[in-house]
Amino acid sequence: MEESIVSFKAKGNELILVMREEDDFDKILESLGRKLDSSGRFFKGASLDVRYRGKKLNGEQERIISKMIEEKASAEVASFKEDEDHQEQESSGDHEEPDRTRDKLRMRLLYFRGLEEGMTKFYRGTVRSGTLVSYEGNVVILGDVNPGGEVVAAGNVVVMGSLRGLVHAGADGNKEAIVAALSLQPTQLRIADVITRPPDSGQPKQGFLPEIAFVKDDMVYIETFLPQHK
Amino acid sequence: MSEVIVITSGKGGVGKTTSTANIGTGLALSGSKTVLIDTDIGLRNLDVVMGLENRIVYDLVDVVEGNCRVKQALIKDKRFDGLYLIPAAQTRDKSAVKPEQMIKLCEELREEFDYILIDCPAGIEQGFKNAIAAADRAIVVTTPEVSAVRDADRIIGLLEANEIRNPKLLINRLRADMVKRGDMMSIDDIIDILAIGLIGVVPDDEKIVVSTNRGEPAICDSKSLAGQAFRNVVRRIKGEEVPFMTFTDDQGLVMKLKKLFGLKAN
Image 1 (cartoon, rainbow over the protein chains, first blue to last red):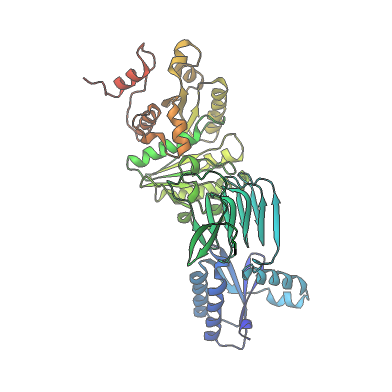
Image 2 (cartoon, rainbow over the protein chains, first blue to last red; image 1 turned 60 degrees about the vertical axis):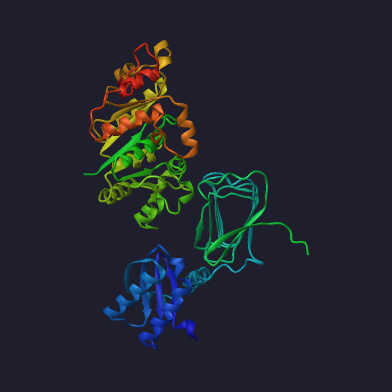
């Protein structure tokens, strides 16, 4: 059971690193590296207070792990030390709350997987400047997205209107996500961690021409979206 | 020695953002490393006027909240070296930033930039307090209208109460023909009321609308009168003595300006 060598928990603003006591340091390091490679982007740019449990670490080992988190997750480790109030929390018998937050975090550490079938938010109306529509699933906008408006979704974004604002699909890292709109002329378009913007000299498009944007080899491609007659 | 200059007005729509974009561009053109900070959170415009809207990834709120490093939020201008923008957040409000955070940010920017221009939002609430917190100098923008001058007077009072001494006045959108007919307040009328030093007079110019919509500051346009006026403002900020445009002659405005800038030497 590789998963259980190292696991993450959230407690308030702290990230708690749970390491299995019986495993040796190298094995823990290797497992942590893999885990950070797959889900480290979640912490990108964040400032983390890291506490650890289970395994006792010496100063040198603390330094190695802290450095690894900084490098692989591009996060800043504000502090790194052993979790002191771990004991009393366990003994207080308050198991329900930490479990729920752990589940929440674990869910968020994985990408949103419901691109084909999943939670979807329908937003009716115009997303105006200064409005942020964000959802941990797919988003369908029945209206326009104006410049200055933002749509951020963990899954796909479909706009039944003109998309002129900022859109971020696959916001928790899923590069399979797509953006489709009846008129696709966003200020900026992001899918997972790929960011694009229209060329500076571009002429604004006239009329409705449905288009779809997707990521291939870390590049955003935009294609005309017309029903495929087979 | 770096300087933090806040551009403020009290009243909305008198040209704070346009002035910030033009003066900032002018300072960068004259070789000073300049950063513009938009503090109008929730109603940001400076990025649009600079034509940099589509490059925004991180903004002022991300910086003060520690979501990114200051360097990541600096947007390099697409035309000029040494010109950078920190945009405001659009989906937040003024309370997302505190004056102490602005002071800390400006202290950090001082190490790298010669000029830090702060575009202040209209009003005298939280946004204004944030904008002036770190300022060494202030430029008060007004138009020759009674309401704008009234608000400018209030702002000058508030600046002095916040220990920003000796603010400078920038009169914007002056129409010489209307002043001559007596339909508009003259420069002297405004200075009589406000009693502060003048740093520039910018004539009303259609080209400003065009350049603002295109996202290209008018100061780059050598034919624009307003552009010329902003170039003079930049020279005055850098400590040069530049004569003011005078609008009292009987000659046409263009002739006067040509004479003023020595274009009619022969």
